[in-house]
Image: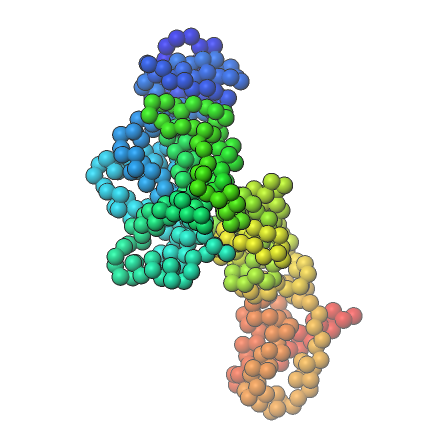
Length: 495
């Protein structure tokens, strides 16, 4: 497979050549017989490869040299549709091998509508990444398309009649969820010259341009599936209606690198003129994008420290919030100076064990100043478990985002025990009658000492399960014992 002179040969096995540096350190030049790979920074020298070398593996990415020819083997409009389906369903640009897979499916006889359905079925398997869930209503599905695909949210969110028009096509059976996205993309492209909405097709066109450059012209794949998903989402999030420079800067090739196969390739993104029809100042949220790139999975067991990461453009504020409200703010992220990266280091050893449910929302304006928003992580449940069990720092977290909290008896904050003392001073008959006739008041009183979402571990002093469970039952001895124990605990706090 190799020929010519090399200062230090790359390793060649079968149809793959392995190089010792990152892709950006090399120049790849197509020749009549194959490729010349020139090491500009290391010791690999110049490696001449014949046309059988279909994969060039670098330390960060692998190049699929057959991708350009594969792309040219199908209709250009079909290729554009495949790239846009990646953006629409997966919220990212395609990598070369993935795009090649769908090209092969198209050439094998599947039509675009069938492939669209396959994209949809794949997207709902990963709702935290794509935003699509199997149980979404038609209206919810349409709103996600407007928000994540067309960039329309906040001040530019669609009117309800537009949402219902598209949702009605699903309800009536005129379109499936897989094919509806194609119809909405076609409709969006028809606004190319519109003075109000021209930025929407500009955004779509720019994402296509970047996707074509990455997967077709450069034939790139990151070296692990996880990195491919993460990095291609970051690249897509950096595209704006005004330009693609920030996205191109994230692609690991030297600026100005020629396409692997110059024949038939469109101009490089750097030479693509911006659409003259697009207003110079589209709505502010058009330049605001955000995507989650790192967080524990839903239902994950977590301990120690972990980092939450969000990437995009125009990020002014990112908050970790309860699943269904904006208060209390659990934590605010750090924001990079260029507004493209937000991160939060979470130390679970400073939190009580138990269950935490939270979501992440990114904003285009600083805290308290409005702006657009996007939920980059819908609510996820994390099981916090550290050994030894952390002590409580500060007040008991509310049930709004900590539906289960595990505390030690020593963690319980002081609450005046007088209401319990008053109950204990009642005679037996009156006490039993109170438990039976006033269960709500008694239960609420007891919950001021151990809230309903708190459990004690290790269990001591007879506290097991809900300590107010005895309320309303004929047996009252357990309630008396636990109330007396709680009085003792609170009195010890007061000393």
